[in-house]
Length: 50
Image 1 (cartoon, one colour):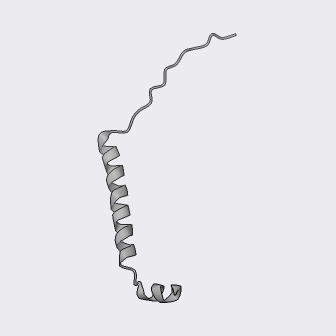
Image 2 (tube, rainbow, N blue to C red):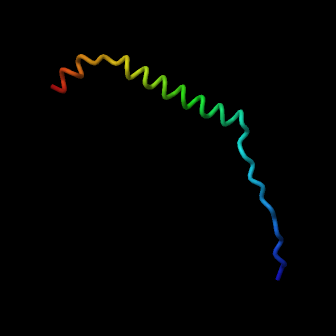
Image 3 (tube, helix red, strand yellow):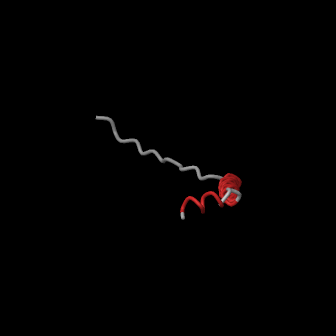
């Protein structure tokens, strides 16, 4: 029977730059989605719902 070898696994965290890029791209995507939804023509949608 082989002895158990203790191994340590180091978990590498994301860098600050990577975290910033992720949150910035998410915020830009939400902003662009909201902007696109606000530019949709609403008169035909209002007329169809009433």
